Image 1 (cartoon, rainbow, N blue to C red):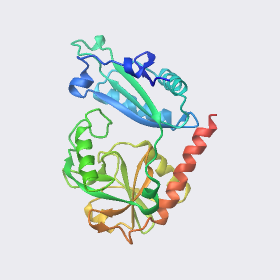
Image 2: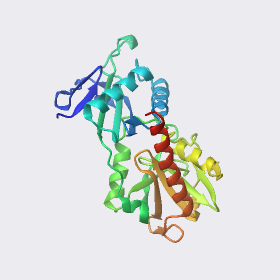
Image 3: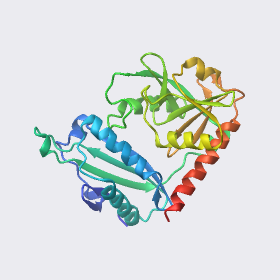
Length: 287
């Protein structure tokens, strides 16, 4: 069966999908995207993903003529046509062809789905290495805190990490505050207290980040959102990363620094179990 994608207003074979040569997302990165996952045919926290998309579209003047119901229907159609229950989905929205008049914009919407491929099991058993990103997150950049298609700096940093056999690179701001990973949010644990950079840093308001915060509260863990620095990273008892694909990924080394004893910590394990349970509960509830 040919692979299907949802492009603008219809399902088509992937080989037939075309984006115009004047598309502003292709030419200038004027677009947004959401990476989502489905479990049992249900997209985890779809409403939250779409609210984030809509909020970024308003903030960055990306035209979005779709509502939640229309996008939800398009995603369901794609999952059914692809015969995928557990999938990784990407929704991309651009401002479409260049236009001089706001009302003449014709946005491009592309939704793709592939079989869900988790991170390697050993990552969760033994933890991963991360490096310190050599680049800096500019706090005055209007795209910070938004998931835009101008993603190449993140990919460059992630490639540098992979060259050093690391799973991620930690970004800091231009004023030396801990921000996030290339494709993840970051949490620290110190004396059984959970810390994470505040959204105002700015960092992406991750869907997995919010889920972990809710799970932490259910587990009666103290959570502090605040400015964090390299000293906090190096003094942490545990470190982990989050996104909806990696879930809760333990970090045991930062460059040559070993996090505590170099073993996956108990708080990280409990939060990972809680996150997996949240996915199962939310996705099964809608069956």
